[in-house]
Length: 63
Image (cartoon, rainbow, N blue to C red; front, side):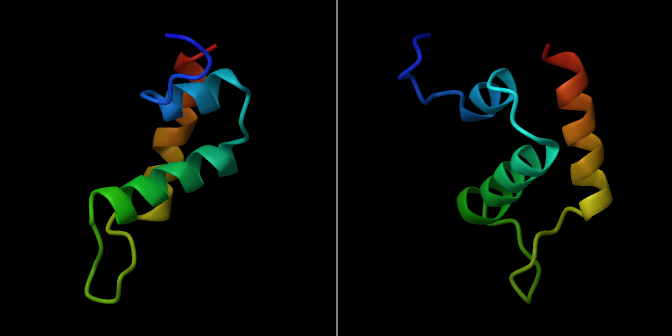
């Protein structure tokens, strides 16, 4: 994969040293805009705490 390949934007964020807030916002965008996972009010289904836990895990497994 070269630096212009956008097939792995999450991995690109992690490799670039993005902040946990940037990673969480990316995941939220994917959840809402790409996957359409929202409640009746258009809010994400995944609770913030679970998303933050996922971000923390991702940031520990990707150097």
